Image: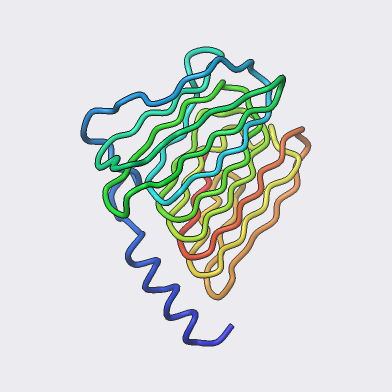
Length: 197
């Protein structure tokens, strides 16, 4: 990678990064926009347009999506069939869009975020997270639950404290192997990755 793309990514990181305790702003009321029953233990694929997202465990076997801040013309669609579900958030505005997504506590999640900050916590299962630009913070839980964990960032830092790892510099990455049954895989473009217990 040449210096010019690295400098451009650094600018994106500076725009997306936040020094606050929570990387996703929590103020303002939420409006539920989608809900569907979905059994625990399934696979959920999320395709998320740019914005700030908080993904957490639901109180039961359902998927819920709520918007806050400037929702603009954003839409959310939840589909499911058997043990598979998809969540698509589209047409999000370019400023102050926030969404919270609740899924069953035991779920395998695959998450693709175009840009923005993401917080993921309280979910037991495989986790595969991809983000083009923005900070990602994952509450991984007990590291003994995982058979493998890895992460890479094009421009940013990695603090994988849950797995006793950290990395910085150009294209930092980490790999970890355990004895559990779940997998955690993360890939970021520009942004900081935090994996905590």
